[in-house]
Length: 49
Image 1 (cartoon, rainbow, N blue to C red):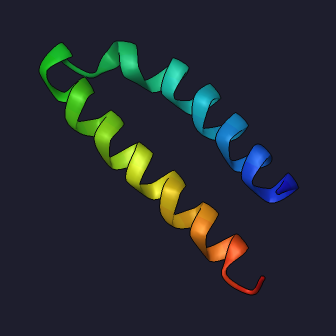
Image 2: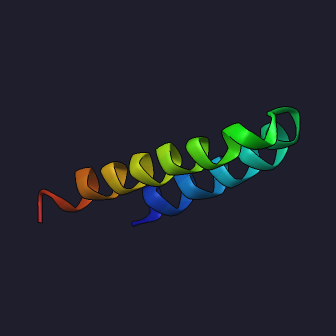
């Protein structure tokens, strides 16, 4: 769970830094990939349980 929180925190910081430089059209696509990636990461953590 701590790994997930760290990952999300790092991602949020990176997105705050990177998103302004990306054209608005790509933001939705990028956020979709981000959500999927976070979900995959979360499932990888919880799968042993």
